Image 1: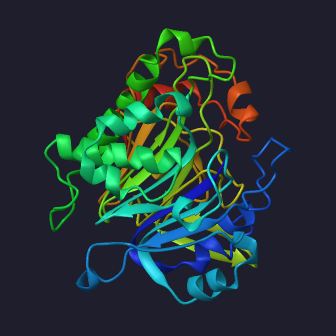
Image 2: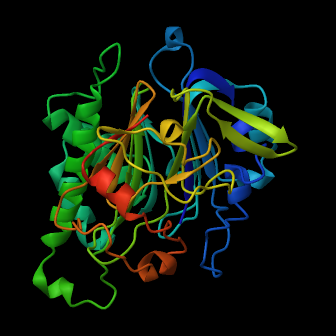
Length: 369
């Protein structure tokens, strides 16, 4: 599978401080995934992509650079990242499963101000693709340039936005409401699940049919970011996803970075399939109406926090909100341990199982400041 990284900050950051310089940067993850367990495909070398937003005077669309060259072997990536800054960045390294190697299949994808990427797979893809195409409008059908399930999922998201009354072609000056983006994401997942559930019975006995989806999606309109960690199963673990927040991302020695937290604010939020550092905390305690790691004194500034399985993470005005995805695959027991067998078979790995306090806090839809 793939790896992705999201940066959202109050200030711009040099791309190289995320993509190139950290000891476990997204570039390093293209050839050295510490959390990858599938030795049959140890690399994410089937291309990469970087998307970032520039001065609003240049338009609302993100600038996107993709290449089929492995990220570790692309001199142009090094040249670009060392001289480019942005306050909202998506980065993705790819390990293809079914589709071909081409620029049009490299993430992130974009339409107008919206940018999208995916780590995982849409279950039973060959059995639902035709019906998915039939459910979306002509405009979004024509926007698809490649052949990945990820890009078709983006087309489904765009179609969902339009059906909700938020046309992607007409973004508001300050972006879509964060609730609208989150709801569109949840409805997109629900539509995928419905397409899989409606597979005709004769096909369901096929030996190559696996209805389980791994849907770690990320979408942004240049103002709000919405990410999911999701698997369409009540017993399996989802692909890994972490976040870290603080006031400053600093290099304290060559190639080693940490997140500093000088106050309760979150001037910087990072979301990643794998941590850019491996200095993760063990737990954090919930407060009555929000999670405040600094005040509780448990999560240290350089921690990466696990995003629980089947949750949606929203970054709005530098506030991180985590909500459970309450559908037929949500498990209400905070102590339930899911199986990691499925995600390991896909070359991914599950996060550490969240402790009871954290799972309970997320279940209640608390905010992380």
